[in-house]
Length: 238
Image (tube, rainbow, N blue to C red; front, top):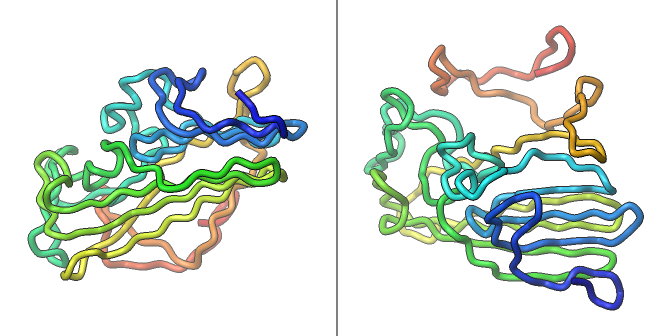
């Protein structure tokens, strides 16, 4: 459904390409149009079509949306990204993460990608549209097999404009009394599809990630304390 000026009316819906989707849809009816879908569960970007071009691979079943940890974490917010050796850290007393990959933890605290985030703001317009979600992680709701003796508020704002630009702003606030460890990742599956919903090759595309250094991991993908400067390698940079 649309307003008289062509903007999308705010509603919760089942998104046609994502069975079981519950959340917000932003649409700018330009030519070609842009539309994004944000799943309330995990505040995850479930679909994104910018100027008529589909740019991500989303979940394809209700189970993939409800249990992302069993289906590749489609576009989930991860707190913390990557692996934590033994599910514990000497820098975070009292923190215990679930063991879900061999003897280690993969992708941190379950709460961010498992729960329904609160929608705090929504604006639909012909030039710009946005929606904002938030959630709080604490010792009471962090998730199964998890000890999280901290309190953190996470906030994400998705903004779409007529130029087909998608901006994602993430804000974190320590709402507790103790210093809290923080790291956040977005498990995005980038993919292009044609008008027949078939995957298109991406070999000729370039992805730019601003940064000057990388964290080094060991053979088990566990982060080490080593930091390396960005350097050239055959075919590009890392």
